[in-house]
Image (cartoon, rainbow, N blue to C red; front, side, top):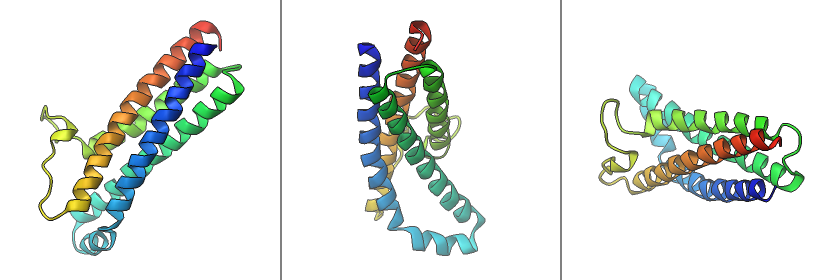
Length: 160
């Protein structure tokens, strides 16, 4: 029982840390919102980039919020009946958001670089900050996915 509480407490901390970075990324990206919307009127690629930016940031924020809510619920109410199943569902939700975010913000396909090796854009300070926040969000989503895998395994083996 104490092991599950530690896992859920860690998940709460991860979600809170991720939420801070999510807020920073979204706030910085909103600085360029009107310019991006204007460009999207004239370019299909700009429209696609704007759409992907919005959906990946939203998916990351939603996954972190869901993880926070589930972890708090399981922490405060115990991992009662089907705790392992809930953890498996949360693992799938967080992993899907992580994959969606990495698909857009990660390195181009076929390149072995990490997301952190993206080249900053000149004279785009707040965008570069948003990119750094997003890289941190992706790391948090990685760790959160792993934590839900551990919670699911412990829950299933312990009968929670």
